[in-house]
Amino acid sequence: MQEPCAMGGSAADICRRVPRSDGLAAVLAMGTANPETCISQDVYPDYYFRLTKSEHHKELKDKVKRLCARSGTNRRFFYHDEALVSAHPEFLDRASPSLDARLDIVKTAVPELAASACRKAIAEWGRPATDITHLVVTTNSGAHIPGVDFRLVHLLGLRPSVRRSMLYLNGCFAGAAALRLAKDLAENNRGARVLVVCAELTLMFFAGPQDGHLQTLANQVFFGDGAAAVVVGADPVPPAELPIFEIVSAAQTIIPDTEDALFMHLTKAGLGGSGARSQLPVIIVDNVERSLVDAFSKLGIDRPKWNDDLFWVVHPGIVGIMDRMDQVFELQPEKLAASRHVLSDYGNMFGATVLFVLDEMRRQRAAPRRPPQEEELQLNDWGVLMAFGPGVTVETMLLRAPSNNTTPMSQEN
Image: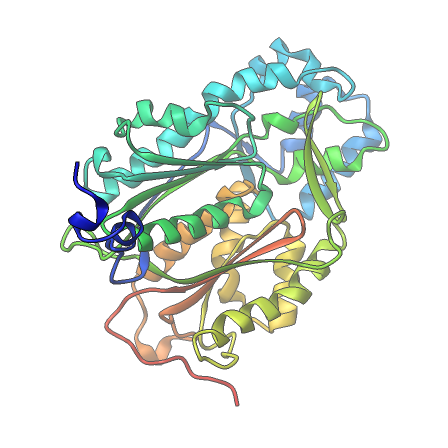
């Protein structure tokens, strides 16, 4: 066997010569999926109280109606239906041990939903699944080893040598965190193609109404089920691969003194947690400008004009966050249209939500544009992606939508 020096250097030297990408990581394809059961928010209070055999709780039903009316959501999708809930009456009572039963269900259901989104993304990408080199999976709906990542190798026909990363219980910032990890993998491994998928089922915290448990009611009103997948790679190979969004930078930060403002944990009755829901819009939005300014300053760009210079991909969370964003950043309504559209059509799907928003932004930017003199807003090449979750944690990404227009962003003095 040759000594390392005879092969041209030490093992460490050889490892450092592993080629890295020349360009930025980019989103190359996207896909989303939802379960079949779709419930309109208008009828959800009647549906929920019938499903949980709780129609005698008139006062609680009125609370749910008010929450639904203020939710900014028109419909949501669910894996659980009347047949499943009838088969598991223990799901209705938060005092009944039901974690094992819930985990047994999501062990199969989450990978299947994730695979549906992945197949769409891979089909759009146009290359065989065996060309995927890395797999990053995130979910709050499970606690298994081997997990969703392991199951997806078989379901999608990935290579057994695909390099897997599994992220559990990251809350609503999980999708952005997975995308951040994918950027690092793609840019540090030449030719890498990273499949990112986030899949969520609200079955983990579904429960019947109980007096004094407003958080339980809020969970039933605001959250929905869905999965989103993204193929990420650097140095795309045309004509098959075309970058949809380049990921220029990615950062994560914790808002100080917010550990108890929003949290989640597994309990005997499934996924539990709480948050200062009425305070979250202020806690989050009043701190995100610093993250944005820091991100741009690292690129040598002063504070941009939030309305004129950027497109916005924001995890909507609850409608109050969107309203606060509009107020603090003085945004025109069109700026958060993609986020509000996703919140309206799907509700909050935890980490998958921001990837749905990214897909919706792609559709909006691809729509036919009016003549310049008729446009009220310029569709710009630069954008920000932001997601928020327990901690309180803020994920911030700068994106660029490649086009022939490479004019730098205007800056405020």
